[in-house]
Length: 340
Image (cartoon, rainbow, N blue to C red; front, side, top):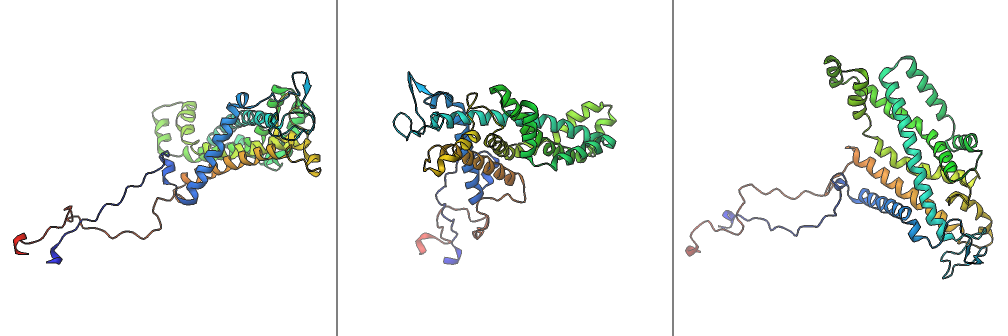
């Protein structure tokens, strides 16, 4: 009689899932940990940059409170939670204001490099010929220079190494953008060369669509899908390049804006004297911001690649299949209950 009993397996407790976007739900284990860590650090950086005027106790170039000077290399205290620098600036305020400078450089540099790189890659990949060979040669020549060295040269050419707030931001953004243009150019050019041979492009030519309409409406829209992933990775490179320029003395003047690389340069002598509070905050700002954007970019790249995407429960021993006819919710005897 026991062989004729049909049993429905008991449903286990339903696990609550994190409110993640659709693409991020396919991440598990270490991949999800990297994604959440990168998103948290990047979100913290953006929040600090947006709220810096409210969070910073003093201005980035403020040296006194009322009529009294802050003093040089003051220990952390109630008035200065992270102490003061060798020049007498509040360390916490400089660190928070530095997030706004870093964010401004990231946005300006990426916009300039994306616009120039995408347009050049589109024209080169679609038209081909001598123009394509010329642009590819220029991109290869720019690749031969280290990005930091190229940024130093551009910074000297544009602003002489140091400048005011807008001049310094513009010079630093152009310096960083020049190093990124070949990357976007090569990516977009390769995608355009592939997409222009697709049947829908040929169909657009047949119905009489113009060249510029085909390039921007049909080809470009299908050639920039991987750019958001490259943007997140290049954001960390922009921060490192800006910090390198400031550390070497080619960045923004301290009374024009707060910049982490410059503050680290001024704190080098303090480290050997046992003064840790002038170098640790800007250094942590660079490390955590670069780490967050890098983890976020790498995780998004993995999720966008179907070969690297994993599903929850993958790798576990599958549960035994239950026959479709095993539908009753309780044990049902085959015969009359009175005969048992």
